[in-house]
Every structure is written in structure tokens, then in C-alpha cells.
Length: 338
Image (cartoon, rainbow, N blue to C red; front, top):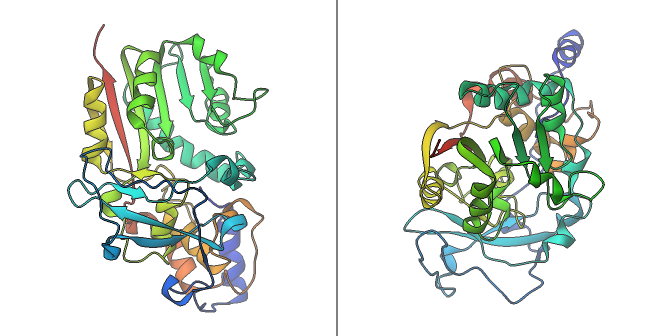
């Protein structure tokens, strides 16, 4: 998730000498009683799938309310809770996710130059662990397949994408999985979207070649401050109701051990943090907050107006990489065997 503006925009600001401080668009949810507490089923997630802890619903202090950061549903709010034993975060409300994935803004993303800078980080993580042009790689949960397109532009011919939510004509055809086993599997921003991670990882283990690598990128529950649900740096990572479970490093490593995988690398920052102007998570979070607070703004044409001409936005555009809140992480595992 990045937004597409560059040093040309900075030059525009300097040349016009426009520096206007903004007032944050969003206030605390405590002051927004008009938002709708929503759950279209009576089912709730009351137990932790990592350690088995069960939450008491009468303990209202354990439940934190977040609003949906997708524009079509921004009037709806949902509750999350943090397991006191393992720190995993769970979305309490069980909803019909098919309904919420309609018109999902990530489908609007384009392979821009800024996104290529971010994908370079993912690419380098894979190359660091031996990815070569002769290896096969599967991007599982690839969305519209932008990273697959990026790899093909780099000269990789044996790269494939699959997404169970995509249409059959694009990346939704499961026949692509029969091209396995794969030497590398990328699971970027996927595991937090599935109800049972044990089932997902077991399926991927069957697709991963012995000695192969799997890179898992996901939010880091340990660095998400649930006491500030109105701050985009945190509510984007919580991303209700799409993120069902948000894990810590320890809980992801626990899930990997269940598959017999060995941890070989860890990074405590998102792949879309780069040193380039405006291409880091703090900057796009600030940009989002200047507008309507939803992630839709990131995938729309840049709006050059007083909302963008703030000290805070320019500051994070320049220095956000070094001020990362580390609310996301990536973990590389290796499957044993020859």
C-alpha cells in the first residue's frame, strides 16, 4: 500500500512556499456514536486459536472498537480483543467477508514506479535466500498479480500467482497449483485474512518443495497500539473486519513449527518502507489521515490541496522510513528435506 507522488511534488511545495498545518480529519471513536456496530451473524470469535484462551464478553474493557477503513463501509465499526496470554489480536465479529470484498480498493492498484520500489524489497528478501531464474515461485493470495508481473519484468519465467478470491479468468484458477511443488512461496498479507491458519499452512506445505522457502508478511500484533483506534498507523494494520487474526512473531513461528519449517530470517518493518520520498508507511498513513481516513485514498489520483500541504506530511515523506512503528513484519522459513 503506497501512494504515487514523488520529488516533483516536493518541488511544487517548495516553489510555492506553501506550508499549511492540517487538523486531523478523524476524531476518537468515543465521539462518534453515529457509527454502526455491525455483525451480520450471531457468531463471534471468543477463543484464541494460538493458545486456547477464552475471552469473557462481560469484560467490556477487553473489547476495543475500530471503524472499517474501506470507504464503502466506513460507517460500520467492529470490535477486536487481544489475547492476554500470547498477545494475538482477534476480530470478535464474524461477518460475510464476500460482501466486504466487493469493490475492495486494493484491486485498483497499479504497478507504478513507487510500487516497484516496494516490490524490490520483497524481491531482495527472496534473492537473499537463493532465488534464481531457474527456480519456481508461487505468490499465494496474489490479488491482481502485480508482484508476479514485477518478477516477470525482472526475467523470471517460472513465477505464478493464485488467489482464491480472484476470478477464474485471471488468478483464481486453482489449476495453477498443479505446477508445484514450488521452490519459493510468497504469502504476503494473507494469513491474517484466513479463519484457520493451520489449514492454510498445511496446504502450502504440500505445495512447497523439500528444501524450499516460504516468506510470510503480515502485521505484527506486538507493535499495534489498540488504545489508539482512531490513528491510521494502527487501524490500517487492524483493518476490520478483513483481518481475522493478527499474530506476533512468536505465534507465527509456532504455526511454522507445526509444519516442521525452520526459521531462517526475520524483518520488523513492512516491505513498502523505502528511503524514497513519500514511499513509506508513515507517509501514506499521514496522507490518508489528511483526506477521509480510508485506504481508498491511497489508490486514487493524488489530490493536491491544502490537506497535502502540511508540515507533518512532508516530514514523514522525508523521514518516515527511519520512524517506522514496525507494525508489520516478514518471516522466512525453510522446509526441511532434500
